Amino acid sequence: MPPSSAAAASGTDAALAGLAADVVDHRFKGLPPDATGRTVGELAAERRDLFTGGFTTPVMALSAEAVEHNLRLLETYTQRHGLRFAPHGKTPMAPQLLARQLAHGAWGITAAVPHQVRVFRAFGIPRIFLANELVDAAALRWIAAELDADDGFRFLCYVDSVRGVELMDEALGAAGATRRVDVVVELAAGDGARTGARTEADCAAVADAVAATSTLRLVGVAGYEGEVPQADSDRVGAWLRRLVALTAAFDEAGRFGPDVDEIVLSAGGSAWFDAVADVFAQVPPLSRPVLKLLRSGAYIAHDDGHYRKLTPFNRVPEEGALRPAFTLWAQVISRPHPDQAFLNAGKRDAAHDLQLPEAQRVRSARDGTQRAAEGITVTGLSDQHVWVRTEAGAQLEVGDWVGMGMSHPCTIFDKWQLIPLVEADGTVTDYIRTFF
Image (cartoon, rainbow, N blue to C red):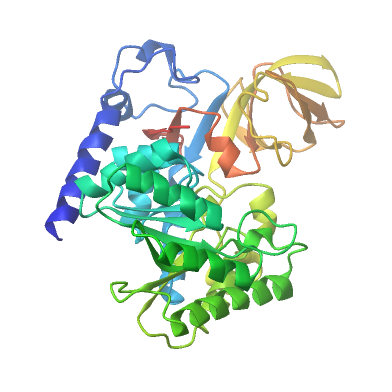
C-alpha cells in the first residue's frame, strides 16, 4: 500500500473509531433508554436482542446478513464484467458502510453535493466522484484546499455547460488552486431528462471550454442512464452506445491531455447496470486504458418495493439476487375495529416517497413467536401512525410488533441517525451512524 493510501486507511480507521466513542442518549430514537450514557461501542459489545433488550418502538433494523450478501454480490458482479465501481454514497451516508464498500473492491465513492464530499473526506475516503456540476465558489475553494493538502486525494466532477466551466475556473483561480480539478463531460440522457449537455456538439463545446482553462483537466465522459425518457432496454442501450461513441470521438480528437493516464467512462444507477455492463464490454480500443466506472448505490440495502421490481438481477437471475436489508418494527397501539389497527410509527420513521410500507412479520406480545403478516395491509401513514387494514381472521392485537419492509433505501436511511445492525436471530452487533 502506497504511503498516501496507508495514511488514508489509518485516518479512516481513527474516524470510524470515533463513531464508537459517541455517547448514546435522547438523540437516537429506538435505542434502549437504559443505555443512556454508554458509548455506542459499549452498547454494541453487549449484543442485546432487538426484541427483548430494551429497544423502544418504532425501531429500524438493518440485516447484517443481507448487507454482507449484497456487498459480495456487487463485488463479484463488477469483477465478472470488467467494471470498477464507485457506489453512490448519498444512499446510506454512513461511513461504516462506505468503508465496507471500499473493502469489497469499490474504486471510490460517488457524491451528489458538496456536503456529502465533506462527510466522505472527514472519514478519509481517498477517491470521490461528484455526479453533478460544481459551481459553488465556497465549495470549490474547499475542494482546492483538500487537493492541495493531500496528493493522494482523487476528485472528479461533472461539467455540462460552458458557463459552469467559467464559474469553476474563476473560483479555482481566485482560490489559488495548484492542482487542476478533474472533470468529465456529462451527456444528457435525452430531451426532457435531467442534467447534462443535450447533444454531442454541446459536449464538444464544454470540452473546448475546459481545454481553455488552466484549472480544469478533462479526463472522461459520463452520464446517468436512469433518466432516459421512457426507459427500456433498447432506449437505454442506444443512449449508452452514444456515451461510448462520444468517449471514442473525444479520444480520437485528442481532447484528453498527455498527462491523463486513463479515460473515465462512467454510468450506472441501480436499475440498468446490466445494460451498462453489456455496452461497456464493447468499448473499442482507445489510446489509453479506460476506467469503466459503475455508480450504483441502492444495492447495499436494496428494498421491498421499487428496486425489488427494477433490479437488473430480475433480468439476469443467473447472476444472483440482492436481498432487502431493512425492517421497520412498530407496535400495535390501537385496535379500534376488527378490520383496523394502528401502529406507533409514521412518516417520520418510514420511507413513503415511492410506496407505502409492506407488513411482513408479526411478533406476538404474548410469547414472542413470529409469524407471517397474513391479512394485514398498510393503507396509510400519518406523521406518527401507520394505518393498517386487517382481513377477517387476521391475528393482531394491541402490543404485538409488526415488521415492515419499505421501498427506496435512499429515503429509508435518512429517517434514522443510528441504525441497529441485526443478525438473523435478533442479536444487535453494531450501530450504523448516518450523516444527512
